Image 1 (cartoon, rainbow, N blue to C red):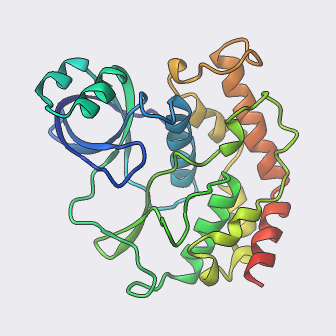
Image 2 (tube, rainbow, N blue to C red; image 1 turned 90 degrees about the horizontal axis):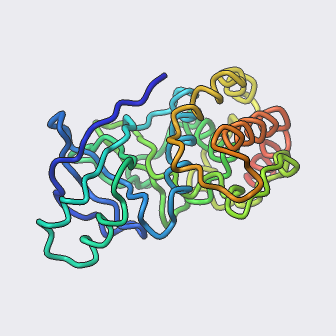
Length: 257
């Protein structure tokens, strides 16, 4: 796999609902994208989580908008009147991340669009795998577009990498926060889909995904000799978590009960 790289040509509008203030931008391929800034408060690790979790979701067959790398020229800040936006653009020069913009998409409401039990189970399984703490009723990070559910915003996934020492000792931990997942009440097929979901991932696929992470997003602690060592540590952690998945699968089943 290889992510496309586009260049941002126009800042269209901020999306102030997000804490990191992403924005809709136009790129040199005439497409519109939701740009996540590397200079936002969460820093490059949020972009690592967006890319890695998002492409794992795609490998699992889950609906997620196309992810692209975006080259951002700080000169775009000159046309913005808001000093906060100017500062964000100036702090984010270089390669950032964006998702394809879904025009007309609306926020997911389970009362209006009750989810399919199979899809709900697959999304819960995936979020438990990547330790995504941000798919709750308060903030679903799900959109409905053309009558289909789409996953967005995975910057809060892989929360283990904040303050990470590079080891994989905690990879087999349960994930108690799955109890707050917005789709958990419908996820009654977790045991049934477990083997199939796990079979879609292996060390090669995870490694290929991590190979797409730009080196300068991987400025980690002294535990890593270089970007390659950090990619290897992510791969080992995620593969070990996959191998020991029974803990988080059972946690989700117990939470439903």
